[in-house]
Image 1 (cartoon, helix red, strand yellow):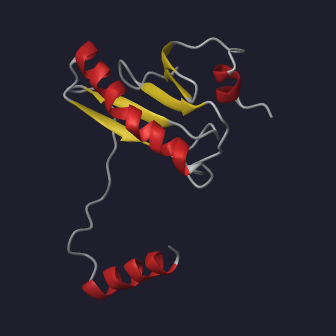
Image 2 (cartoon, rainbow, N blue to C red):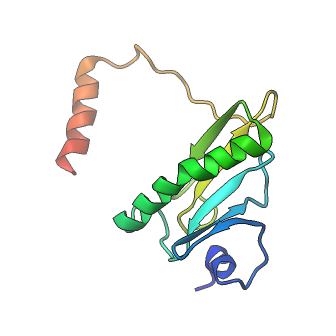
Length: 136
């Protein structure tokens, strides 16, 4: 497999590591959407959130606050986006990872969603909820 994150985790490709343990690494995202944009990546390969082991993801989510607090102390952002892309159209590296993106005034990063509040009747919410419940 030629996965760039596996190669980074194995030390085959240089990265700007901020944390490492036996389970995962945290590196600076090479794109740096904003200063301090960090990726938390399991060393074991999982293509996306549908495939990741529950124990591994639990350990990752336990580590997120520590990394987030370090980013906050280092750069004093006004906020932080925590983001996981799964499949198309946004996942560009098919190895599960979590983005921690510090936010600053006028940073130019746009994460906008149309506010559909009031546009769906209660019956539609019930149908949507039922479809998800049936698949749990």
